[in-house]
Image (spheres, rainbow, N blue to C red):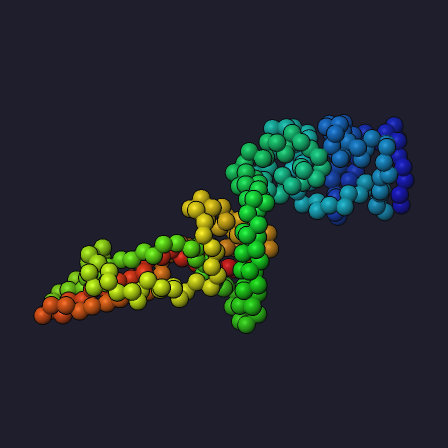
Length: 263
């Protein structure tokens, strides 16, 4: 039943039904911040809906409303760290600016807003996230596994490591000199790393970090847990045996790749 109730008609004790979860508060607490949605709701200027038990109904997930009430009762009562994100969005919804301002200082909120700003500045980040989502959907559709991986690579200059394997002792030495014959060989210059499934284009190191952070937050909202691991291509692109002991020199591609594991 809906009715318009003036401020004077509200009782001091206010029973609430927030998305099916019941709370009880007082009129002064709910009207503490005049510009908030709750103050407006209980100002007598608006239609207030009641449920069958005569509780004032708010169509909102009620699981975090207790943290909102705690802050209204005592502004030093803040949510635990694992609830900051959820309560921050509730504070924005209810228009409780003092609480939102405090929670905005938390690292998780700061990072989330940085990511949102980056998505506006770099539309390509959203396009790549959509491309990853399409690939991921196909991968999960073809298997019953709960984990799937996508390999990304940003455009970058060629990078090589020379590894020397001694024939007599089998000792491996990384960071070895690159033979003149390798320098003269044109075959490796067009090498394409075989693992990457999505090319991310050319970005600075800072832009890469922001884009990977955006992807992480984007898929977190879709219900995925994402682990990002940086690695190298490590494909052998050139080799040569030399000397009577059959020593060998192998050149490996060390371009950076990123493996994203989704669960």
